[in-house]
Image (cartoon, rainbow, N blue to C red; front, side, top):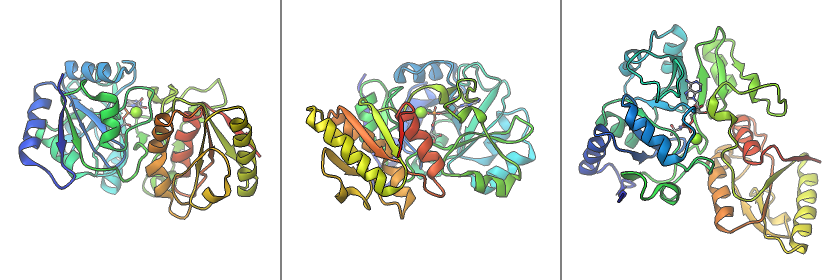
Length: 348
Ligand code: TXA
Ligand code: MG
């Protein structure tokens, strides 16, 4: 299949946007930017389109998709009911990086929800995404637009690396602003529960909803717990090389990574180091890349997946990363980083 590249970095191209809408209405697939990561869109109400999404990504079909809308009034049409908590969340955070889970109605096919009777819904805060959703019929199922298992795409180039020739169109809207996927809040439980941490953090949710729990299944190291969001159990977000996180006071972390990277180099390995602007100059071995600055957390989340892909392209044999327990985004960043590391964490 020939994939159309639609450059919209300088604004929406109306003709190409109409083409995207036509593709979606005919059951095809279009990758598009959102404020979190790039998505791979297909008509959420068309079971066959959902099946195509799973096939293009190589994704297990028990892993449900998020339905993207671009109009508040689209919500009640695909769910059994809209509880007050859902209205409050929508008022506070939509359009934005927050996905809610509600009980679905019959309009949403089981192939979109991986066989579940619930559906995840999100209204993204991105002009191109919203125009495309509306052009495509108003309900667009979209997982992240990466090959299953690879780091999520934060530029159109990343999407091209993974999906060129496998989908109908890629819309380039430039690099994303947040870089980690939306916060998922399950409203089908008695107490709202976060299934995936994101930019909208626990404190922000509690301000709107009162009591909010974090899915106990996210505490990875206990094999007795399983995350409720099916997608959170897979070891995705992963770079090709084994990644190890070194956690502790900054000076000790730098010393440890210097020691490990020296050992790696001495053994003839290509070592990658994920540093920050504050620490980059203090490393002396391997390929050192700054992910961003600790004084501006968003620079870290924004570059997380890209830096993992960079080390793939450089054929790193091993990667060491500092930990990023920053105040607001730390939970989301560390959730992804720890998964990318397959739980390989050294405490110093
Ligand atoms: O920021 C985002 O949410 C991005 C952009 C493209 O919007 N999308 C995204 O989709 O991250 P995806 O498919 O990569 O992740 C969807 C997650 C998976 O972990 C999936 O298991 C969970 O949402 N999920 C979807 N529907 C669910 C449901 N009904 N119940 C529990 N978890 C659900
Ligand atoms: Mg994903």
